[in-house]
Image 1 (tube, rainbow, N blue to C red):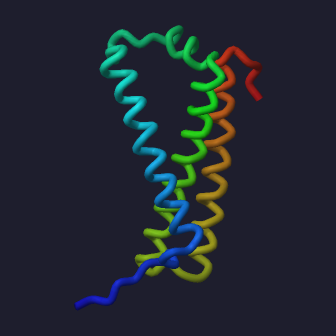
Image 2: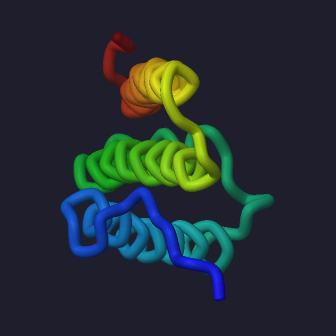
Image 3: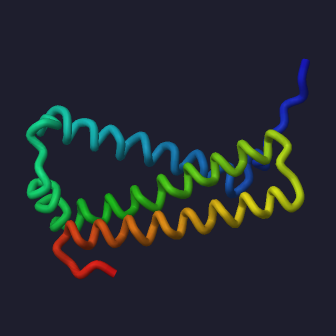
Length: 123
């Protein structure tokens, strides 16, 4: 039988955070699905409705937390999947820093968009 290999140290901090973010994402995605498919149907949602939701501090904070959590979870998962496939050395460092840069761009633009929807001044 093949030996099990994972770039995560079982029981380690990143292993735990990956699972914690997964649980959070499942809950937030369930909330999103309920809100946009049962409370309001997708064809009824308008930009003004989305903007009104974003002016609520609780909703705004949840969406910002969702942005950061989803970004971390996705990028960390992709990086560790590549490491598990044997990515090493210079290529590993290049992929790591490319993913970090892409994450930074995504987070900055996501916060700018959320601020614009909330009626604040975009960064």
